Length: 284
Image (tube, rainbow, N blue to C red; front, side, top):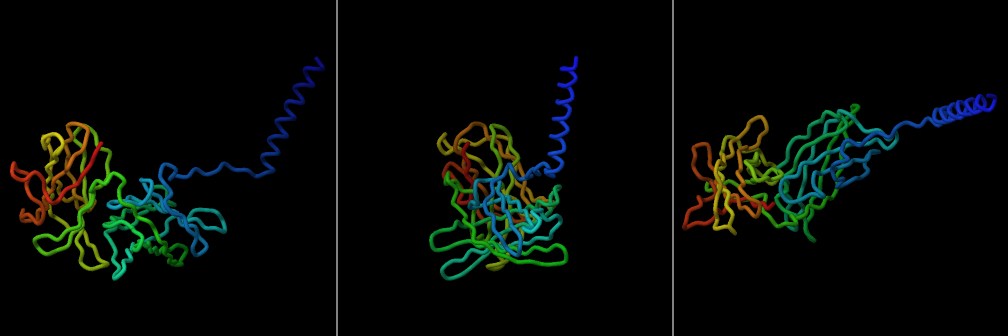
């Protein structure tokens, strides 16, 4: 009996020592990163902060990029909530510089995470590079910083962004919003901007985009139940339905129509004309 009591006493004592040891060390669970599912494409120090840029892809690519930002204070190791952030990407070329279409940055449900998107209309190369300029404010102070970033061409070579001049002599940027295609009727979206200047790319409203998906490797057949893309004022995007009847390579032929229904760019697919000059590509 004495042996059993001694064992119980020592066991209880060991639990108490362990508990006291944990308390005295002041250890706390490591906070989970709400962006663990995304790729950290860039992390850099500025103004006593670490700015983290995350992407849904492995890196920044030509076309539409959904991005996420966090700001960490180096002195405390904590992430900054409810900051106000704006950005201005700039492509520095040999003889000129220009920006690109971009959204405003909003705060997510986790108020230390900020999100928006950028549409890069050209990739980086050996002589030309992109720079991301950021301005952010919190605690009554405004900070600025900039960082050179690399924008890659898509590894599959498929076209997801079109830069063109319409019949109205306006320069446009039209980009497909990435999605996971399935053999089904898919939700399908794009964003459309015009180039007012080398810096200004306002959203184009109230146009429409006719779509005609084809499989060039399968006698250029189409698919049923597609819906043209219509402007959505709430999201500043063009939304419709894309019917994909089998896996493989698809060319989504496009026609951009102004509010009067007049074609600005792109041609109808006919027996004589197998594809439009305006299109997206996908393969799955």
